[in-house]
Amino acid sequence: MTGMLLCLPVIASAQQQTGAPTSQPPAQSIPTSDSLPSSGGSLPTAPASNIQPGQTIVPGQTITAPPLTRTPGRESVASPAPQELLPDVPAIAPDYQAPQRPLPEMSRVGVDLADQKPLSLREALEMALVNNKDIEVARSNVKIAEFDLKGARGIYDPRLTSLSYYERSVTPSASFLSGSSTGEVVQSDYTGTVRFEGLAPKYGGGYRVDFSSIRLITNNQFTAINPQYPTALTFSYTQPLWRGFGFDINRRQIEVAKKSLSLTDAQFRQRTIETITSVQRTYWDLVYALRNLQIQRDAVRDARLQLEHNKRLVQEGLLAPIDVVAADAQVSGFEQSVYTALEDVSRAENNLKNLIAENRDAAIWNVSLVPTDAVDLTPPLISLEDAMQAAVENRPELKQSEVLREINQIDQRYFREQTKPQIDLIGSYGVVGLAGTLNPNASNILNSTNAQLRDRINQLSILNGLQPLPATPPLAVQGDLLGGYGQSLLNLGANRYNNFRVGVQLNIPLWNRTAEAQLGRSLVEGGRIQTQREQLEQLIQVDVRNALQIVRTVESRLRAAAAARNASEQQYASEQRRFDAGQSTLFLVLERQTALTTARGNELRAQTDLNKAIAELQRATGNSLQANDVIVRVR
Image (tube, rainbow, N blue to C red; front, side):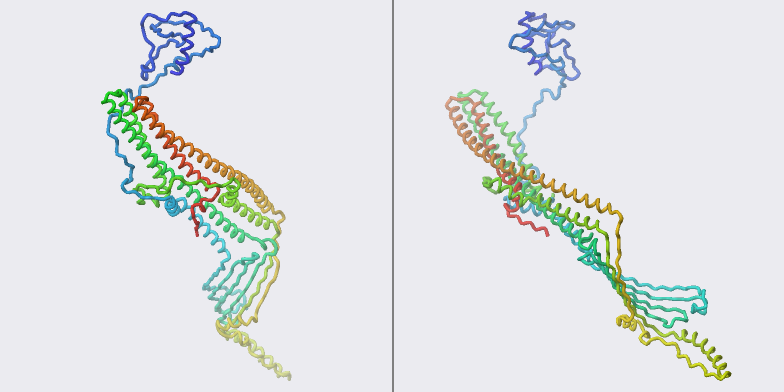
């Protein structure tokens, strides 16, 4: 139809200039927009530019377009194609009219309107901070970071290990001096070892203490003590002198875990601030929706009063019956607005319940929330400089950026440490003990052979007038080595048998490109974090400026909306008086009534927008916790 309207002046101009006939024998009329064919229908094929007003088309007739001339001061418009003039629109639900039914009940799904729960903003915030799932997830992240820090510190927990076992071995004898007369050496032992080791929290050193004790039994006849109880105690320590002396991987993990805990704290505070702001916005949305519902119901009441007034005037013959129809239509329009406002109430209430309810089975889902806080909040008086200073001090995003920078500095320190050569001082000190029972077989096997040889030599010596050989004392073992396991421990504690070692271990890579690359990467990462922080500071500045501007703008809107509402009330009352005096029309009265309803809604919208703007300003400056007296405790 738009294309047709654009073409009509051109066609009319062409008729006037060319004198084309204005009528033809009756044949087929051009369809109008009210008689468009249904889907599948055909349209006339005559070009639209050749059709004159009132002209009909005869099937098969060819119409020649008269030449168009341009009138000075008037530009011609090109005619659109015929398919653009008369599109083939399918007929969907022709002549549809909704059935006349009574209005449905004013209720909200799943809510008992008789069960009302007064709710202040403070109570809503407390419920959200306790039950909100986002807050619970953020709180869990903080606890996870705490356990990560505890685990990182656990690297310095000393470790105690023990190993005990029984062992028996049979070794074939390949030597006459193997000490076995059976051709095999059989040895069995009970061995027990204990190790105590750990890392030093400072300077990167590591210590280890080893203790071992054995009960050894053997058939080796050359063994002087059988069974025997050897014991040993060794203490060793390794101290880095260059790489790892000032900073190592373990201390790095602990420092990173500390900063990660601070990072999750800042993230938890940010989530808390976002939750507080969301609750505030949703709370004021519910306030507006409920108040707007009341405004719409008042509008229906006023419209019905006007309808009854019009009916009386019609009965008195002072008003035309059509004015009753107009008033009735006004009532129906306001009734539609009531149900739309009721839907808005349900949406706003569900959004608020989603933030404060513990779960989907909470009893609060079935009650009707009634906000109790005063709606006329006073905006804070704060300058841009003070707001920016507060944002720099309180915004969790800046705290997170600072923690990331500190973690990067820890990485730089560690990777710089890794570029150094490794020089370690190594020292150990050991003590051994031994005790057991004297083996008589060891003395017999040696003394029996020696006795025969000594007797023969003594006989030869006597025949040759020589003195016999002196008697050889029997083989003996020191008395402190004779005894059981306890004697072995006493010998160990006496520190008679010991050893020690001191040395230096070097590890100097010819190329250390891996550490150099990691250090370079951390330096570049530090520059990127600094750049992101500068960008973040600018974004926060924009956020603060916008929040301040919105507060001032909405405050001005509120003043203007209040003035407009006051003027609409006066205009509506005046128009009603003029209508009763016969100096106005019902149309103007209904217009004033609609304008008053809109003005009342705009005033409340401006007030609730101001309240939400105050909440946004608190978020932008990072003062949501302080402004709402919220103390964050996550540990």
